[in-house]
Image (cartoon, rainbow, N blue to C red):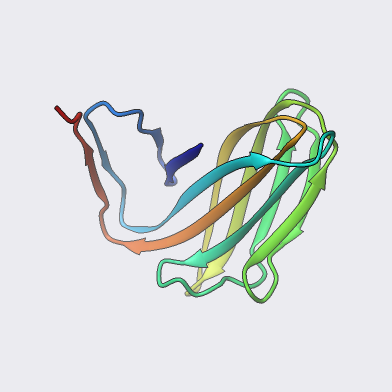
Length: 143
């Protein structure tokens, strides 16, 4: 399963195959791709990479994971020089907020995505910081 989410300061949209339109304000935004794979039974792992829109890794990006139902912060990570991060989470099925923030080009970017997570799965997250004036996305059903 791969889920593409476009995050901006004003909106979050998940596209499910129906005609959709997104206009984001000027500045940077985040695009997040989440993949769900099997992990060892009883484990729940979050790993990922933070990159700029050029593909360059972002060192020192902060990634905070919070359990939605309790508001409890379960992990606070900083991306390595190659942009990667990894955390073994307490295996409790819930919706989790993954908040990422980074200073890129002198501008602080902060956004959040919610992901349903459960034990026995590893969740790979690729966070791409985008620098665009406007982003237009139109998805039309195929015939």
